[in-house]
Length: 248
Image (cartoon, rainbow, N blue to C red; front, side, top):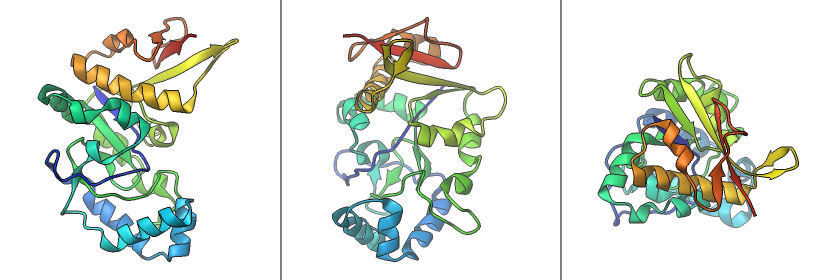
């Protein structure tokens, strides 16, 4: 079983806590994207990133100085979003780190797929960004089915804890026989299940922590997740979706 999650916009450098182990497997493709970004003006980059002047200036500077092979941070420590704060990898045990290195994969518009201890440098590039690279009109075309194919070679079940923006890269291209199991964290409102963005991010991080702490390899065991007030709902779930409802 592989677990897929989204990256986060906010990133940091940390070369002291834990060493990185490998370079990302799609690094030659990342170099193509880096070249495309460096060929854009600051104004074009700001429009691509859809950010304010301060964030644009920071990331323009990062592009100028970027080294994809030195001064790297393990991917799981590099992202600072809410999901990663609730995952709290800084306090994982060696056993839990071994679990996520085997099972967890971070999807990235810039790097493609990352293992937790792949070395990365701070960047800004969301999967839905309309970056033209060579003959490709955007990143969905650029990555095509390569990310799904890479995951399909290592498992027959993928647990989806990613946002739709990222999981689309996998769901659109999965080969027959590979099961995609999506987790939904929501609340009942009438006949609907409604997801709230902040709570979803928190729950996705807690779910990764739950999986790592319990060494879960059988997808059926994720139904035991009961953190942040969520409980598995068999009535709302089906073969492709595990729904967890939060009450009160």
